[in-house]
Image: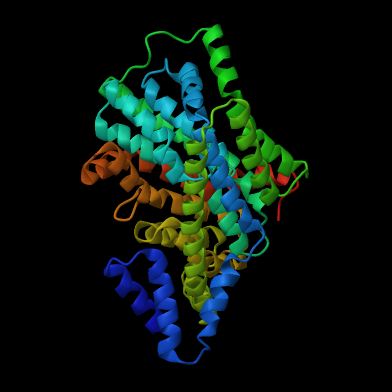
Amino acid sequence: MAKTLIILFFATLILGVPVAFTMGVAGMAAIFIEGSLNPLIATQRMFAGIDSFPLMAVPFFILASELMTACGLTRALLNFANALVGHLRGGLGHVNVLVSMLFAGISGSALADAAGPSAIVMRMMREAGYDRHYAGALSAATATIGPIIPPSILAVIFAISTNGVTVAGLFLAGIVPGLLLGLALALANHIVSTRHGYRGRDTRAGREELLQSAMTALPALVMPAIILGGIIFGVFTPTEAGAVASAYALLLGLILRAYSLRSLYVAFARAGIITSSVFLIIAMASIFAWLLTYLQIPQELAKIVASVTDSRLGVLFILAAFALVCGFFIDTLPALIILTPVLGPIAYGAGIDPLQFGMMLVLNLTIGMVTPPVGPVLFVIASVGQLRLDALSRAVLPLLAAELIVLLLVILVPGISTFVPTFFGFSN
């Protein structure tokens, strides 16, 4: 059955079938063709994959992001970031990085960031004289901060796909890697801006402008504090935090009178559509992931890895390289659902901390969102900015190098992922 499953998966993938349906079709077809399993198992695994209380956090965080965007607070975050770092060399590039870090505390999604604030800053950079493909590349790279800094949809998916990891613990594990990712991209932007002569705003923001922009952005900046503070101090669970975030965003928009009936309808409709696509991917991937486990693929891979090295660091490097290659060809969410139960037991058997492994895998696959040939964030930016994909792919290379350095640090230094969760009592 294993050969049938793999052959069908790659055959449908080569034919251009969407990855979600590729996994579902390959899994169900393998069950029917082999005939050794009851076909009803496919349906059971689909529903079992989405029958999870922690998974309810996903639609809530998606809705909160849509409502905050409908409030118009994205522009407030942009003005605040511009007041803080706009005067530096390559100022708008630094604004791009900082606003993505701020928006990450609301959205938890790279695609939401790419289609929202990153796309806005990209247009501002082009109007200011930045190379259009570099502006697009930086916007794509900064969007990858979204799934790392909490709240993170990918962290929720990883936590429900493995044992011994809590959503709260993985949220906290993403704080330091997310900050390092922002710093690495800011440094890369500084180097590129120095080389090409990209300057910042003419004058540094005064105290009054800083205070005014901070007060305007304060309602948006409070949301991450509510989410993380409530989780850390045990006020609510991560799933309940998503509901609180949605209620806060809705109440805030009503108080500010920022919503019209149409904008509310669009926000709820978009959240529903995005949630449906996410849950469809999870359901289909659950069939495929269960079959891989049933066929003992993880055990076979563990034997292969053990024959190469028994070093904890060596195992982590091998798993990271494998995940990075998978990220080139498989979309992030299905890749995470497939690889977590396959690679997780290998990592845990080698003594790797689940939080470090989880952050390595999430960061690794997130980087895959800006690498061709799949790279969904690249496609979004290319479409929004009307850019050539080949030129955009070349422009993103130095920024990818900066992100890979952060990935290397996460692999080499376990404390980057484990210090904050341990400090707050969420270690494994």
